[in-house]
Picture 1 (spheres, rainbow, N blue to C red):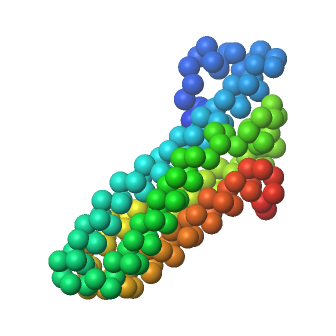
Picture 2 (tube, rainbow, N blue to C red):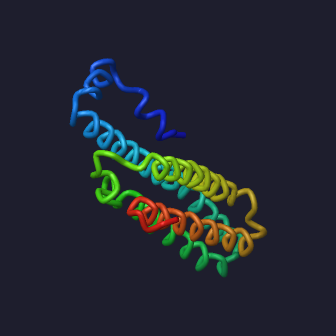
Length: 170
């Protein structure tokens, strides 16, 4: 799991020295914020992409056991998951409205990092829940409704992240 605060701490000696050159420090910090943002979104999207294999296995189990009624909800979950993954991958790199400032409100940046940590944990939990689906084909309806709820929750938090970065969110 990526901790955005650690990303800026893992720079080389030259970059650390260049941070003290007037005007250059802000650029590097902005660059690290943008790179951390990209890595965070990529990590979450990659994690959810890996979990899709388990959803496919679950759907195959439903077919093999004749539980065809559950396939529609599984397809809905798969489509929503694809949409969430696409949203994470396609977001503008670094949310330029937030990351373009040379000086960023550190309290806001801390709130963003806290929100990101919770979002990464939720994405990981969602991925794990999806990967556990093949182990419980007998409770398809309940399991898929839970997955749909979790996908919507992560998508909502991801949208809230964008609002927070643009200064709209609380």
